[in-house]
Image 1 (cartoon, helix red, strand yellow):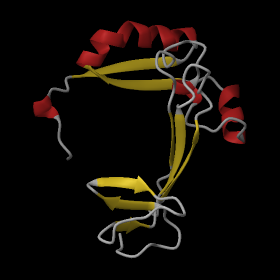
Image 2 (tube, rainbow, N blue to C red; image 1 turned 120 degrees about the horizontal axis):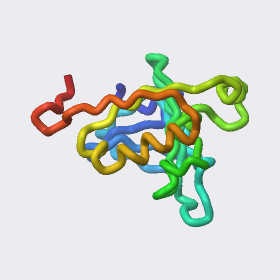
Image 3 (cartoon, rainbow, N blue to C red; image 1 turned 90 degrees about the vertical axis):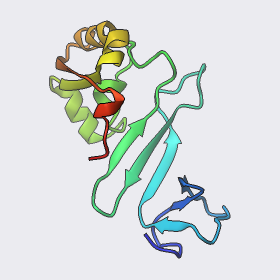
Length: 148
């Protein structure tokens, strides 16, 4: 983190929040700048009912890059949506093409409350996509939550 704008990052922390800073955005002087960056784009899972679904790629100086995609409300557990299987891989990438050629498997870690609400749908989703999976249900009450 630095006080001045770094040469490569586009993230600034002010008002207790990290902001993606675009070229002409004004940033208050006490902001902390990161040399990490986030590249937002439209999610390939967006549809006519929800054009606001986004995706973004995060680039970190500690070499921890990841991709996040949003899926329109109600579509995540639709068996025709592959976001929970392949959404972390950009469409059209060689890595995604290779993944599509192989059987998939997943470990799903889910808290008890979410499992009670959606467990049957989660199981049905992975079964319908023929993904080998195991569901690990954890008790995540507030007393168990910690940053450590």
